[in-house]
Length: 134
Image 1 (spheres, rainbow, N blue to C red):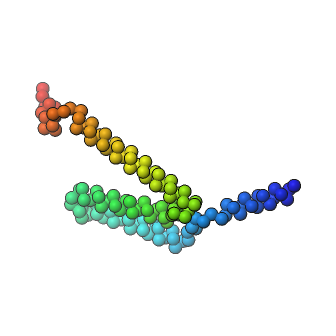
Image 2 (image 1 turned 90 degrees about the horizontal axis):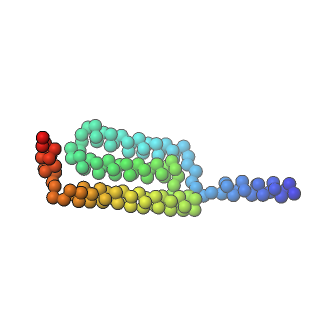
Image 3 (image 1 turned 135 degrees about the horizontal axis):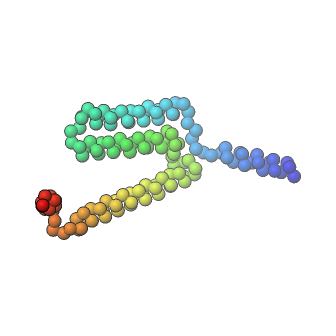
């Protein structure tokens, strides 16, 4: 009976080693590290050097660099792709992104409408005048 348990344990060990997730090498980690450093240094330079004077354009550029860096971290350090864990990692990521987009867009929509509808007819100029009353 002990041989049956041993063979069962061996089968479990073998099953755990058959995952098809890519195992990274030192070259892969160094590539990811280099990309992460560059994707951090460029936005730092853009902000500190005041290269882009328009704040809104700068914010969009920084968001793009941040999104690219998220992808770099997921690929090179978290080893996420469509094949890892049979695609479940990617499905979980997509589900999370959908929830985040719904939550953020809903929150912005609610805050916008609360701001617009809380005090109808009162503009920002009028609110400044009310604050200055004795």
